[in-house]
Image (cartoon, rainbow, N blue to C red; front, top):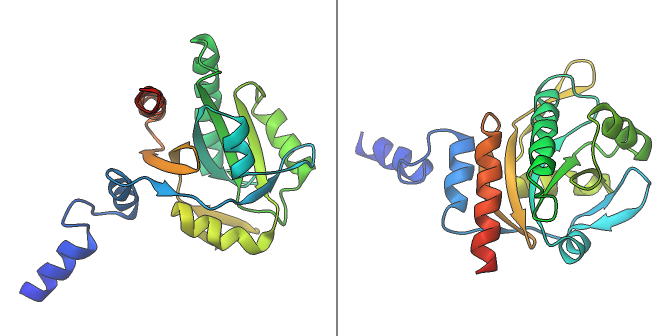
Length: 197
């Protein structure tokens, strides 16, 4: 009994996390996670990487993970990002906060698919962009690094977890629940203020 209790206590990060999402969040609270330099393509079929994004974009990024054929959770994420985009523009925060959607489905999400996704959610390039992995071989590493669980589903789709990832200078600082977009924006602004001091 004591062994079981000890294993539960250890596996839930000393009892602080009872779900995978909560565990992902609590692991970052004290130690931001360095993210490798993944390579991507954009809707113009131009290559870029996290290093290049970090070098050229000094904003705090709110990142989500999608695949453009998704008709379930990605639609909710896209709608939340639409609302965040509107808030960012309305408050004049586009030079401080950016939105980045990353597709984990490079076999289907080429430049044309990304362009359709942009149009579908009326992305404003000043705030929000979508990228797809350049190399399919990097897919599992990307998913593992960010803690994204993807399970094949019928009709060539996927089931996957979703959240807002607060990212700056190649580090993942915080993960916010999908149903808390306002908190994600607050976290991004707070991080920017903290790093600028």
